[in-house]
Length: 386
Image (cartoon, rainbow, N blue to C red; front, side, top):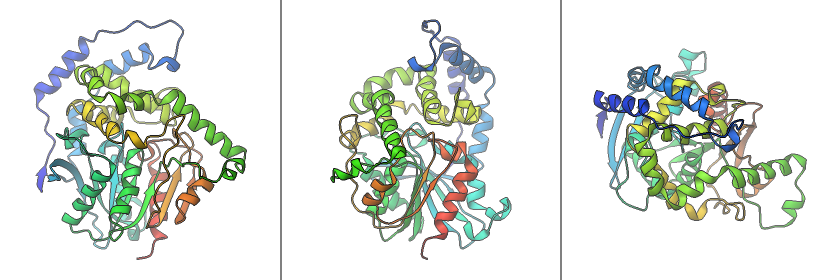
């Protein structure tokens, strides 16, 4: 393992500014809004701020406040933050982002999770944090071979935690990071004390009565999932079938990369009008920068190709999960892209020990509602046996 510090050469930032200034903008049908994609006026204004108002060096310094390392696992470069708590008996915790997320998602929660005493909390709730960049994403860089699916990533995480000396730990994640965390519990049940997720897609049980027994609320959740798969999952189908093709556009055009990501923050976050209703603008752009500066738009998309056989579609639900060998906590945020159905989740995961439904927040929980995220994770941790 080698210590790592982010230090982007100035010529890369100058190149970004030149590209932003030279953007070739498309036409737009007057009177249309977000239903056809990111509106032209909104994206022009955001790109102008990215060029002239956003300060990457400040973002870089904020990221570099936390100890970072790189190592090689199973042939892939793995970058990670490793923030140890000042509390010596803190619980190790590995937190995993998804797409289009990054390590930047967790900047608002690092302090409260690692040092609750300094944030008005109980020192017994402290965590030693490991926050890796998923192989193929951001500072972990492009993967150089096929086969990097959810299971392989989970095995890499088990190896990483072992190298760090953590024999017993918690796993947490959202989006693809939730799948990785659940799989990690399966591949390392002796190491994972419990898994906590803020994203869960529940498959219908084989019993037909399970569908008939849904109440009005659960039927609404099922319709929401169907709507997402029908209208909001185009990105998933494209990345799962032609990741290399979309890579050319996103790697060459910063505005293209920006639009590809901010659309998801608008649709999946608790953002009534624009993404910034839910997420700090600078943190949003820092997330985009971690894809742009590392040219990993295509590499991150390849993960969808690797897991295409388990992605849900409008015609095919996600496959049922194998039994989870550890306690599970589930946090449900109302504006997420899909809502799990509790009765179906209980059949698939009979060891759910905490299920929390919030009245605000969306897909990017640690960014949108850091206090809710931290409190729920702490509460879940308190329920676990030593």
